[in-house]
Length: 339
Image 1: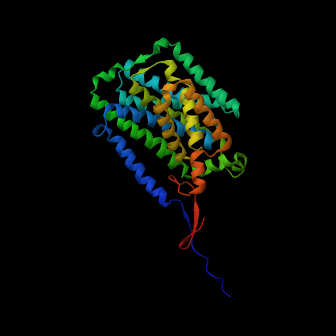
Image 2: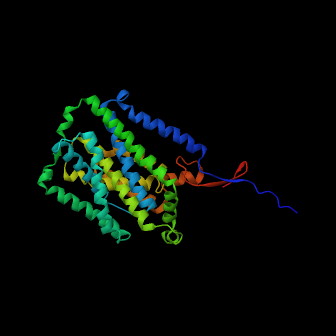
Image 3: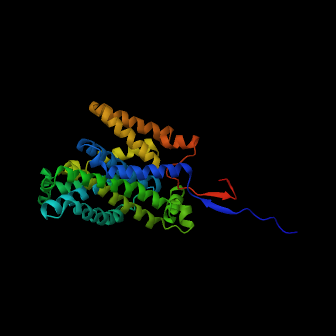
């Protein structure tokens, strides 16, 4: 007796919510690039700051949420790229917009020995090690006459460009920053490397037993996160037109990234976007309260870590399965979708 034909099985990776989110993401990137034609200079600077928050938080999310590398020193690479931009543009006369991309070589190169030094550490020791590295970078910059030591540097060459030209450059860099960090992370997580990264996040030992090169993957993520943070730092300090060691290597960037990811939802791009908007709005409305404002943010982060580890997006996704950036794979049997 012949066996009944089995239903055709395919893998479904996209969802209706993901398609809608993709269209909105593309429109958002286009809107960012077109800001000089619809937004004022103050609005462009505000949006640029938000884009930097999103980029740094997403890089920290890739490190801690997927690679299991909890860093509190990513500001080291932001400051390194920022200083590289100022040296290339102000000292050597390189076009500042070209210098942005050349400056990314510095965090990429520095990330290699830093990881070789830190990868033997685990858990809180790794986190402390990254903070120490960032402090070393700050002390070196504070004592280098080539970098004008603690006095910092100004990007005077930007005076050669009109305000409209600077607005165009900042807008396009904002679009590039979001496209490379958010779009790049989404593309990576949907690749075979992303599948290995998710397996490593769930259980590094089991992933290694199935052929995943955990060390190499963590190294790749660490270097990529360094470059992403470097791009955010270069864009941010170009807009500020000035850099000095305390601002370049400010640990507040790590604090902001941790808050955004923990409150929004770790190991999710959606959580980074939600957390960034929450922090940005809270900073605009309550930043004037100073220390008490930071205490409230810290308490909120601790409460989320203890009682809602998935963050806001984790709570939402438990009730509604409508991911904006779907990376899971579902089996589809015939004409009926059944996970």
